[in-house]
Image (cartoon, rainbow, N blue to C red; front, side, top):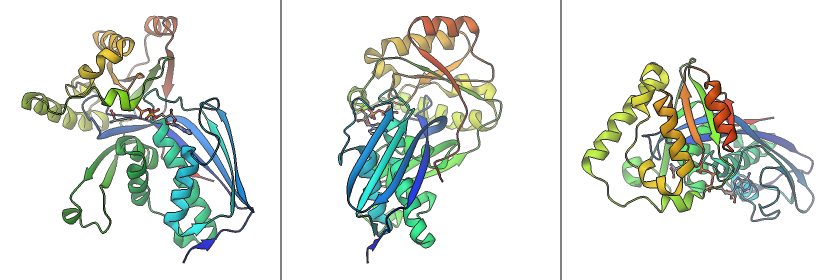
Length: 314
Ligand SMILES: Nc1ncnc2c1ncn2[C@@H]1O[C@H](COP(=O)(O)OP(=O)(O)OP(=O)(O)O)[C@@H](O)[C@H]1O
Ligand SMILES: N[C@@H](CCO)C(=O)O
């Protein structure tokens, strides 16, 4: 039976950005980044009021089709609760359509906020992190981003289409993720272009079929990436090589591709962040000043970011 939430309950979800793929781990590896959106939700007597500040304030819809609102509604429904009205305030710092997982963060934040409201009514209604990984991944479609924003740190995510072998009771994909503890010496630097790039567009550039040797190349680099991220940062250069998506997306991402090549020539492990256009650099050293100055002169915003914890509710 659906329970109605009382009016006047408030929660805030603080949800990190994420970078997917990390080079070879297409649709698999992700890392949570210390750049946050904050979503505050209050239950009211009727209607929907939404306010957006910061990133996307000019262009996301301020109504029921807003991604965060849809995620809140999904989260309330999953918890078996309902609110007569909602007041939603989004304070966004994660740039949209830059390969920093903004859409996954919006979904994870909305689901976590709904979960927080349900737990205020009855702590037993709370969803586990694994359930949040499932709900956010099936809603948004990118488990590499979504599970990083749920669990924090770096993650290995995977999905299973065969419900019977997964032992699942519901239809559709089952999503799973495990967190990795990132080696403390690893620094994460994002070089963020001003232009947007749509994930749907750059996914459309990927071929249906890849050569066996390229698949084998990525299997080795993807496995190595887990070792490099957790124990052997000295292996980050080979561990971030890829043949499955970056070269195919390069025509749509010329600035990104040039910067990855420039950084790698300087010995810095760099890859396309998610579907681009942000460049993700992983290093044990700070970005050299000359490269930072050149990047900024070319219109890239350079951010050194912490590896973040997963979404938090207060
Ligand atoms: N905080 C938000 N609130 C509402 N809508 C959002 C929010 N963040 C993202 N979106 C929606 O998602 C779109 C961006 O999704 P897209 O998948 O193209 O990029 P991304 O998630 O930023 O990057 P990537 O998936 O490559 O890491 C935005 O144009 C907007 O419609
Ligand atoms: N793995 C996805 C991430 C999108 O954020 C892609 O590269 O398309």
